[in-house]
Amino acid sequence: MFDILQSDIIVMQELKIQRKDLRDDMVLLDGWDAYFSLPKHKKGYSGVGMFTRNSACAPTRAEEGLLGFLPSPEASGVLYRDMDEEESIGGYPSAAQLEDLGVDDPTALDAEGRCLILEFPAFVLLGVYCPANSNGQRDDFRHGFIRALDCRVRNLTELGKRVVLVGDLNVNRDEMDGASALDDRRKGNISHEEYISTPNRRIFNQLLIGGEVIGQRDEGREVGLLLDTTRHFHPERRGMYTHWEQKINARPGNFGSRIDFILVCDAMREWLKDANTQDGLLGSDHCPVFVDFHDQVALEHRQVQLLNLMHTVGTSINDNRQTQLAPALSAKRMQEFDKRRSIKSMFAGASVKVVQPVANTVREQEIEQMDMQVERLAEETSLPPITPVQSPGAFNLAPAGSRSTGSAQSQTSLQPVPQLKPIVNLKRKPPVETSPRVMKRQKSSSATQSHARPSGQQSLRGFFRSASGNGASEDTTSASTFGASIGQINNRLPLTISIGELTAGDCTSDGGAIQTNNSTLEARAVSTADTASPVPAMSERSPAPEASPTNFEARAATHHSWNSLFSKPAAPLCESHDEPCKSMQTKKKGSNQGRSFWMCARPLGPSGQKESGSEWRCGTFIWCSDWGGGKK
Image 1 (cartoon, helix red, strand yellow):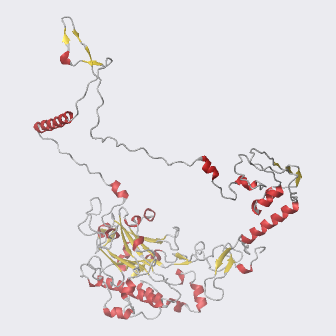
Image 2: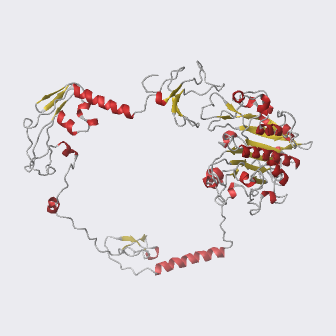
Image 3: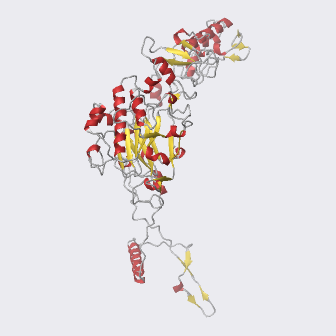
């Protein structure tokens, strides 16, 4: 995924995980550092993460929380706001500002995992996930969070630091950034001025450079500080949304809102190269937003490489970068991931060759050879004496010292060599003799035969066998005999698998054979044991019920009735497109909560309304309780 984004810093919001959910593939990424701010109390709630490419940037400090009320792992539990100025990022709201913000519990606000801050030599990066509008249930908390965000950004700017704000702010600027803005105004019967002046939107617009503010600005917010990078490059573009509601399948029709932003301070305006949305990347109800900076930027009336501003002074970012210890908030420094490497990095590193020491003098080599000979001699002398066994068929060439030389030529004599016994390996222990395994005594066949077998059906063959008159066991017969007609078999078989249902056409009975227009089923009787009870002839048995087309029709009707009872009813067709509808359930509180209904399966169009005669969702609506499944 990171290769697709082609970014050096990636910020994610709404992770909805806990620390125990972090895996190796989230933390131990080759060439990347990971930072997380996760909720401390609520499970599967909010969460912000940042990933930085080691070859391009290296943060000097890292903090979580917006107000600095969380303990710092760097300073052994000291709050971020209580650390020394040289060790902290700074810009924390003062006591007077906290009282003005109206935040009841600053620690609880920071503990929700909604803000992560990294400081680079070039700028301070804030990744945030602002609270959403939860039907008015947390309006005070949401308003306090965006006020605290505005306060922290202004305090950092007063310290002379460049600020970059990235994240899901859950608020749009004006009607251009929301497809439903006009409908919301019409339903609420509010004007444009009232829409722009809603509490959260008013604070957000006062933080932006060029944000629309109705009336006089608030005290302490006289000047806008951050530039909307996406709108800066596309000032008149409409439909530039970053979020779409999944419940109504609004993304295909681009009925959404722009609530994800990358904001930079005015001092970085000339650094910008491009900014846009990536609405083609699917997988979430949000789409990524990116900004690209120039390689060379203006800093204090001179051009410098931005790459040199993204790491600590004194380190080389290119070929021979000096590796520095990441901030304590780095996920790689967590106890469960500390001093660990990924499998890929273990094999990617250059192999280290161990140089073996070499003998410096000839004397050392001679001593080593003598030691080896002494060890070999000690092994030979430890062997037991070998008893030779004469074998007339075993010969070998005599050694060179025993050869006899004549006047004319040398002759080599052949001497019989005793056949040696194989040498036993002294290190191997002799096998331990074990007593023979006592086999369990098997029961005699007579006892087995005399054992009484349980009553009932013992095999599939016994299912088709007629009951014997004298009550003798039928399993002793090697070959079963049976004679049956279709009616008898149907009486024994279940309703759903009876032969009568599997045979089509008229049936006629003729003696011992049952004939149909497709096949003939013959039932023959063969007796192989004297102990088996005689099988009565077909004429002596009770007359079989006659199979007729009426029986088949009745069984087919019963089968169809059961299927229709348990099968899912067919979906109705929508009015405009004549396509199957989809089933939904009402979740809005009221008398209809929990009821299911049918509606057009197509997505909403750009207008956000149901349309008739178009390619978008039509106005078909049918309660499931009113739909019988027969016709539209």
